[in-house]
Length: 177
Ligand code: SF4
Image (cartoon, rainbow, N blue to C red; front, side):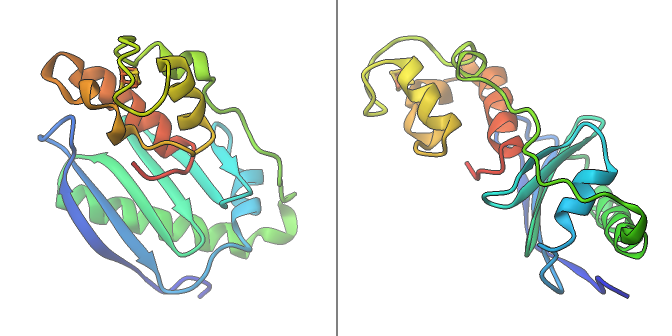
């Protein structure tokens, strides 16, 4: 078998929705060679070959695969986490088994724009993040040069849902928040 195991290394409540959990899990081997095949086999995923990372959705859950681990947000509970792990292990092993019939794809698929990210920021231009404007902060989030945690107003109760969307964007781009 190509991938023997996926072991959960971290699990806790989602920041923006404490009724759900987020978790990380480690692969028993490096799967970097198979990610372009997963990208070629699946539709509606975001692939970033520079990291490399590949993000897909399972209903409301967001799943990001790296070469040595995966990160999932909005899983329902621990049982759901183990179900997701089983499905991903099967997916990765199936793709590996069928790789002769799959065209690997190195192309980076669509990702959000700075304007989209900006639309969920507080738009106060308060400079607490160290940037002159919120749009500058959005651009740096997009390129992975800023951390969402530096926007303190976003962690106020009024912005809870917007924070959740931005965290989703960040995970989809393959960055960690
Ligand atoms: S801290 Fe947040 S609200 Fe303030 S400028 Fe930066 S991005 Fe905008």
